[in-house]
Each structure stands twice: as C-alpha cells, then as structure tokens.
Length: 203
Image 1 (tube, helix red, strand yellow):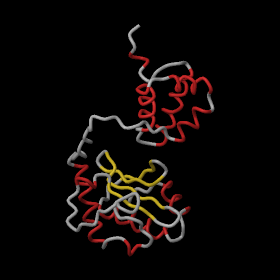
Image 2 (spheres, helix red, strand yellow):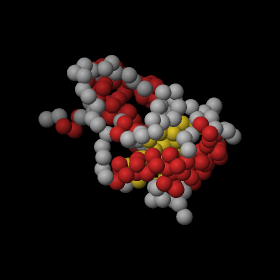
Image 3 (cartoon, one colour):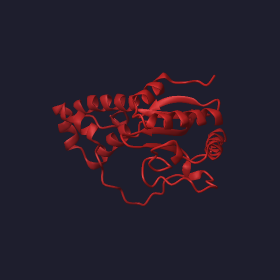
Image 4 (tube, helix red, strand yellow):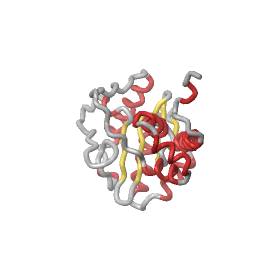
C-alpha cells in the first residue's frame, strides 16, 4: 500500500472540481513510478520526496493546476516536454488530464527524477554575476515587522547587509513551519537590537 499523507487528501478535496481528477491522476502516477515515495506538504502544497530530497510537486489554482520536477534543469527530457513557460512547474497551465503527456512518458520522467535523487545528483550552482540584486522584502516579513515597533526601528536602522542577512535567512527556509519559526526568532532578536549573526561578534 502506498504511503498517503492525509493533508494531501484534504488538499485535493478542497481543490476546484476540475483539478481533483488531475491531482489524483498525478498522485497515482508518482506512486506507480516510485513506490517508495514519501508524501508531504511544503509551502502549503503537495510535494513528493525520495532518497532524501524532493522529486516533484503539484499544486492547484483557481483555473489551472501545475506540476514540476525539482531537478528539471538536469533531466534528459528526450520528449521535449519540460516547458514551464506559462505557470509554476514544467507543464504550463494544466486544466484537464489530457493536457499531460501520456502516462508512459510521465512515469519515465518520474523514474528519472527519482534516480537523480538516489544517485545524489545535485542541481548546478547558480552563477554569481558579481552584482548584488536589490533586496526585495517579502510582504509577510514587513507585516510581522510592522506589529513590533522596536524590531521595525532596528531593521530600518540596519545597513543593507544586515537587512539582507535577516531576509534571506527567513526566506530560504525549506518549509513553511521553519520559515515561521525563523521569522519569530528574527523579530525577537531585532527587538533586542541584534543583527542576524550577533552570536559571532567578538566581545
């Protein structure tokens, strides 16, 4: 019996009617291709993990669904089906099961994604341009700061580097729970006037 996560059952049940058969079909294909896959929820939508990492994820929206492979950039893609141009994921906006490639092809790709994880294949490191991008502060971060005047004042007085260290630390969390915990800690530290790496300051 495949291991099912009840949170994904609930996610599918709450999705739009058009999305339910799509999500159920994708889920079945994933379990057929990789029986040892583990289901989980990350960033509030279904993910499928194997051999210590995510192989793929799916999500439903108001008018379409999305499905993507975590390591799509290093997959072979012999059928030239990985586009990702129109929506989050690698297959554009999926509005019905027929929008997906044939089951045989999907299973082939899911098996390859699982193999990459099993063999420890990593995504290529991002190329450094030598120029720092403008810091984009997420809305959730600003909202949390606005509720604490001391933390907000500390953040506003920070140098660009100190601001970036906090924002990136919180934003780079792998799960929503970790992100929330980091945000809570960040607010506490900033309330005390501390920078992100205050523990490493020589006294």
